[in-house]
Amino acid sequence: MTHAPRRAHVRPFLLSLLIGTAAMAGMTAGVTQAHAADGAATTAEAPQTTKLRLSATGTVHAPPDELTAVFFAESSAPTAAAAQGQVNAQVDKAMAVARGVTGLTVNAESYIVHHQEADPRNSRPAQWIARQSIRISATDGTILLPLLGRIQSDSLALSRLDWSLSRTHRTALVQQAEGLALRELQQRAQAAATALGLKIARIESVSLTDQDMPPPMPMMMAARAASMPAPQAPAADQDVSAQADATYILRP
Image 1 (cartoon, rainbow, N blue to C red):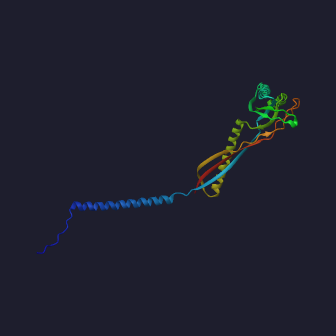
Image 2: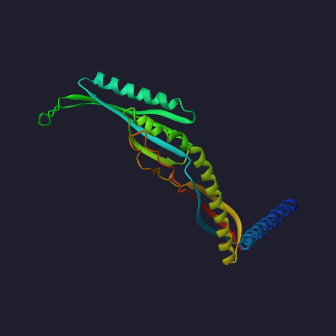
Image 3: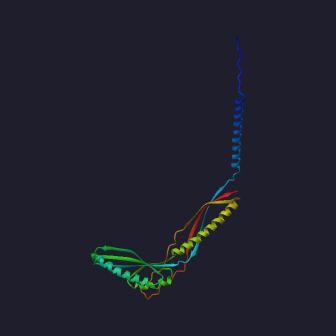
């Protein structure tokens, strides 16, 4: 007996579900393609940028405003205690004189005591040597200069005398130099952007560095005689410099 093939029957609600799923899949693919197309368009429209790195230096000139004198007392004796006692007396006297003058800054510095062996060839016995330094500074040289001879007459030797910029004055000068460096940096960046046919979009980074402190300006050592005139202050200016470094972002 021959049987006729059975026909597959798909229920109506199942057929609707399959058709709906296929339609949603097509919509999802269309949305994904649209998003990809939008992303490509955004990338193509983004403007290209260029980095420009520049450095500039600003320098200001100013006369030094702080005079510093360094003295030392030295004494030798058969014992360390005796040598130290003599040095202490000399230093105490000099510091008392300096502290009695308004406008001076007085500080005791290095203190050294060492033993020196005998030297028979020069008929020198063994001895102890003590030495101490004191530093005296003033922002008004006319206050300190007349005092040099007086302190030297008390058996102290002048080892250093120089002019320099005080910390407060130098800080103010560094700020001025930084301002000059930044202004020059901005002018150079604008000129470079114009020459390249670009515009400054923003500043990515900026750094400021002050240069090394200028060395003190030494003066001629004063004579030991208190009656000799004190040396005059130098007229030469000192330079204070600052460097500015920056990275600019340029765009068309």
